[in-house]
Image (cartoon, rainbow, N blue to C red):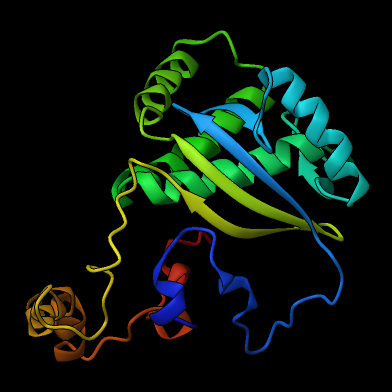
Length: 229
């Protein structure tokens, strides 16, 4: 993990050149800049386009780099497994850019809940339950989160990979002067002792009762008592 210094900002810096283990490819990467307004894609590389035209453009660009191809075994609604191969270069790039902006402008709890909602939304769509009250309710939640998802994301494409190279938004929740691991003028790190004690209470009770935390060492019920002769 590399933090502080040049990593402190979130914009278009030379941070991608700061590496320890993952070396930078010694080739020219294809760079793109995606702009969004209230969650909707509006431009790529400074050129305004409709969302449909953006997908078509990114399909061609991302497809040339092997982006967005997935080979998977899935679970069908009827219960059996099936093997499928999906290709969506443009959608993959847009989703990556979208997540980059959301991480910058949405609070932690909203982000975490959106991840839960995304799984259910995908399940409803896959199972053909599009015209349902639940799908409409989930849409209302997602729509309410997208107002601040406005800004630009810079990405680089290389051999099936999408590499983040910076993100900017006027509605960013990030402050470099608060993203600190050492200064005491932002918050007193000794305050962490309080929630450490609180989060540890349940584990403390387990230890006082000589119980394992979890897993194979947990006591098992004697099911033989419920067997019939």
